[in-house]
Image 1 (cartoon, rainbow, N blue to C red):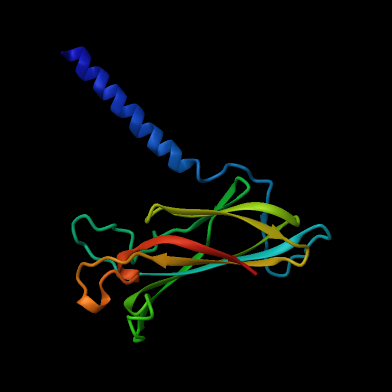
Image 2 (cartoon, rainbow, N blue to C red):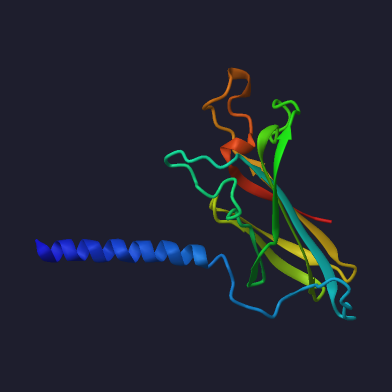
Length: 188
């Protein structure tokens, strides 16, 4: 019986190790794909400038049981991976109250706005771009073509819609308080 218990513990440990490794695989280890552009730095002849930005709204921090503790805190991180090189985007957070119509605006209400933005330099070409939000366990991958003139990449969240805690007319409508379910990656 002891051998069976040890075997089951070993199997469980292997499964958990595999899950942890699969999440780490979203973040690459390379460092030769892009460089973070500093203000006033000259751009090389064979380089393009790309600005990556996102704006995500979450509910404020609450100490409820089973609630992700990183909402409304500075631990709500967004990572990008370009062809295997990853980085966490610099972030600013601010409290925000929006009084728009909740029937048409999923970001209506009181919460915390996270603004992420960075500028990078890389060679023109086609890249695999991944945005990863570990707190929500959301990642989206897309091919992006970067011309010599550069590009702006905007990561726009799509919110979940849950029925709980809402009046009947708002049930199942997307709402930032229900969390992020995915991203739209727009390249201009």
